Amino acid sequence: MQILVLNSGSSSLKFALLDPESGETRLSGLAERLGQAGARIRLDQGGAGQPERTEESLSGGSYAEAVARVMAELDALGVREEVAAVGHRVVHGGEAFAASALITPEVEQAIRECVPLAPLHNPANLAGIDAARTAFSDLPHVAVFDTAFHQTMPPAAYRYAVPEHWYTDYGVRRYGFHGTSHQFVAAEAARMLGRDPAELGLVTAHLGNGSSVAAVQGGQSRDSSMGLTPLEGLIMGTRSGDVDPALHDYLAREASLTLPEITAALNRESGLLGLSGLTNDMRELEAAAGEGHAGAALALDAYVHRLARYIGAMTASLDRLDALVFTGGIGENSSLVRARTVARLRALGLTLDDSANAANVRGQGGVISASDSRAAALVVNTNEELMIARQTREVVRG
Figure 1 (cartoon, rainbow, N blue to C red):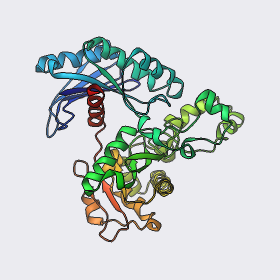
Figure 2: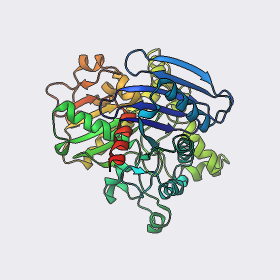
Figure 3: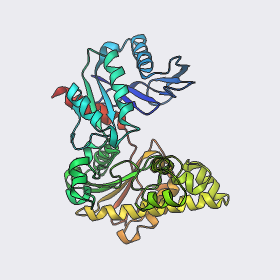
Figure 4: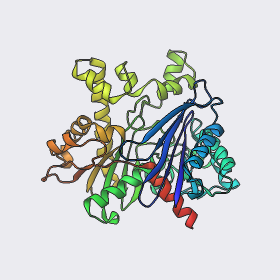
């Protein structure tokens, strides 16, 4: 069984054709700048090693054109008939979905009703679904929700201390995101430790341009750093993470900014970029901080401080901490972030094996904690596409 995985962003379409059992990838790629001038698509044949890569422009630059190009490539490779189903990443499923779901008109409408909760993401997800269902009309399509994994959080973790009718009438609560990644790495961590997921208490840290931390007990999410939207929580690439709720009112009065302007700045001009005044790329920040750039050093220190603080907070939602798991582009690649973060967690009894941490880069993964560490620390390479493919397979099988 081959599953085609589609991840539709606000102006992009990431795709992969893979075997949900082995994880072998036959075709993958990314269409960028959709709906804009200069739209392009990159296609990679083969997964591991050195895939054969081609790049070309998309004259129309629509989701439909991008999906049609993927379909044409599948035909050219002679694998179109092997595709059994299409799995779609959907960012926000609200309280309607605690698991992946076969896409029906009713499911599509429920995704549409969540647009106010994810105005940048869900419309793009719907556009990708519409294009793919037209191109692959003979196949089942499955929605895999970022928020579904976190639907096991208890009310004490997901409710805000706001008027009750805000929750009942408008769905104001904490939802959590990056669910497919947190679920995948929690299972992989249990496998690497040779333990039953049901007996483990984990803190999983998905660190990239978007970042979140989750408490996972017995394979289920018990808490998340993200909230109503993906803006709450950690400092991220261009997102502020936590700020005082009165900030909007203060800036509206003092700086004459509108609410949309403030929200846009918190999403696109803040985080590592805002603190450093330089970049949102952690690799560049580490290099600049090493050369004495004050803004880069501040951004790095604040990022680690907020991350360590949230990791400590997540342990309050666990029976015990068995392992801390790093994943995502920063979590998998930055030995410096890992080292500085764990150094702030001495109260939890966590210590690193410095040589194992320094040697661990993307593609490797493994245990990086010292032998006398009270809990394990691991690097696990996330694979959201594989998780989406596996969940799609399970839904199709019923």
